[in-house]
Image 1 (cartoon, rainbow, N blue to C red):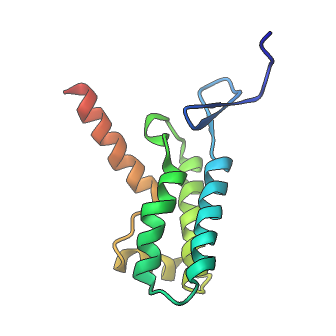
Image 2: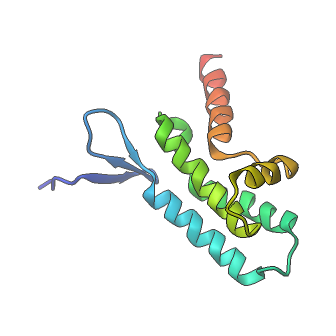
Length: 130
């Protein structure tokens, strides 16, 4: 017997019951925050911002972006992913100013998820259309 559910985890991506293809980002964002807070809790202010950001990029970003290259995300979902990263930057640099956050992201060469996903999606399109 198959049970009727509103969410289904398939290959690490949560698919949501909808009229069109839709994914749930709540679990990905939760995993990101859990991992980022664990890193931040262990090293706190002892490590430099560069070290913390490198750990975030290598350990936490994959949790946030896993499998999303293959999914079509709408503008609000992309903004939600970007907001997740912006909130982490606000915590790291002790600010609530989005201008300061963007300046820090630019100075550290950090790309928000919407930009990363766009690049990854373009690579996939080139790969599959070649």
